View 1 (cartoon, helix red, strand yellow):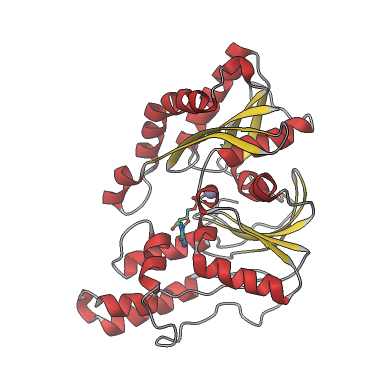
View 2: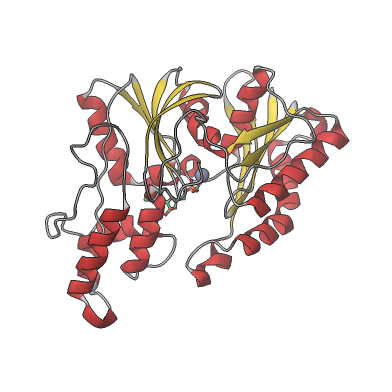
Length: 336
Ligand code: KG4
Ligand code: ZN
């Protein structure tokens, strides 16, 4: 099967084509980052994002098909991010996918963006169900058992900020810029991990929930002690403060996914943890950790194989939890 995927839920406009004929392969993978448009504001501005998706999406779809050497007639379905995310962008992707499905008589598959991240390891490494997944992105931070397509059990979630959000806010505090994750990682390379004793939130507590706001507060207090009156931090201080830690255990294969999974320190620690627990560890290549459309096309293909298609009246979903049975985390600024 060959599936076109469309991703527009945040600040990357993306289109990709994947197939499972013979082996699982990405035939085309186009991502256009809107970073330059949002950078002056220190974060994603939803209206600017929606407009930028609208301007770029058609061209990206044409480019992706050209790169794959295919036309619409060669496709078996069109998959798109139906949520969760910034609603303006999700609407743009949804309408584009519906138009293609209608005109070319193709099945339509609405994909949960988080399921896209969650199933990426099956595209890249053919990981078998069930597996343990640490999903860490700009809007989400969850530990899940992935039992199958559409079947998730949430073991833990952040009770406040998402991991990527913590990176982004901390980078702002440190005066490093936006987006924070990659900049903190770069700064941390020159840092001394022993210099600052930052707290390990929730350590020793029962359950798998996580928290990052206390860490952020501790960081802010440390910054204020070092640079009272808003004076700029010396590069050395920023580097030393920029080290974060995270660990998790359980299951047979440990998979990490989402934008923060691009972080080398996190990958190393998770790999060591998996090894110590006798688990296999899978982390998708960096470009498939941050937002992309190949993951949406792949999740769409997996759903299509199970006959899980959607109607043209599918309504975009700003919120769409993977495990609806799990209680919402009170106080969490997360989208699911
Ligand atoms: O999955 P993603 O591209 O978008 C969402 O679905 O949220 O994740 C974006 C997040 C941002 O918060 C960004 O700072 C973080 O991933 N990120 C990183 C790294 N690269 C991106 N965090 C830590 N280390 C990185 N290398
Ligand atoms: Zn994402």
